[in-house]
Length: 326
Image (cartoon, rainbow, N blue to C red; front, top):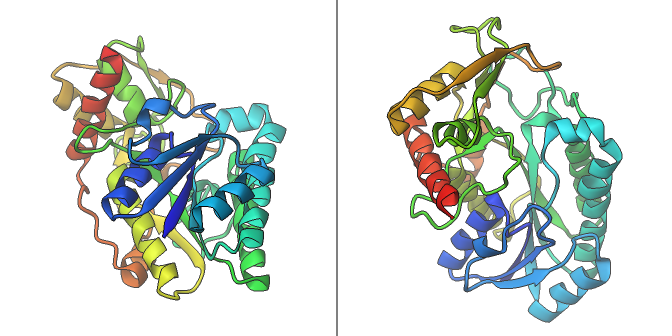
């Protein structure tokens, strides 16, 4: 069986490619290298530089490699950019996904795993978010992903394609063996930026809001180690291959950490204090966003291995140190 990994030169996609290869699968990676890094592509994977919006290329890859499964990570992910340039996000995340889905159906692909996001929920007052929570995205990024979920749902109802949409909360950390990690310079992830600050690559770390209704006044988020997230994808793929039904699953641990707690963990790991600057809240930022992972654990049998903030931070800092040394 061959798996096509779109965006496989990126942060999560490169981790997924490694995991698939370790399972003995043949892996083809399609990435246009707009944000991906060629050096993150595993040696044993076949790499093709190209775009998921190129229907002819995608159909060719599916036919040549007898692709049975597609894991779709390619897309734009910087929320502020989606606000300033929404049409680019709809083009890259929604329109290109539509082209990819159609090529998969035409090529006889049976299984499709989609990289979605907790941003499909938008702001919520719920202490924990389950999959049935209202879908009211607060930005074009979240809307572009929700539109793709809708397309997959409709396509699965009309064809033999089965899909799983995995809604990520806050992905962090890096491969425990140091083979890959978050390498996008403009990434806005808190833990990455905190590590960059610890290494002197940023002058300070901004704290956006210190007056939230949380224990220390800063925003609380559910951080999931990238390796645990990849394990969820593998289980989702197994589920579909075993004849399981399509659906959506939250990917998080079910508890959160505040911005100040993350800063403390990075300070502990790096051995020195971080320069921080308290800034106004960003529009639309909720006080806390925490996943209810009950469905993922109950239906797919997911059991996290790296559910500890200090471990997530240590792996992220170790990787960032390598990136800094290049």
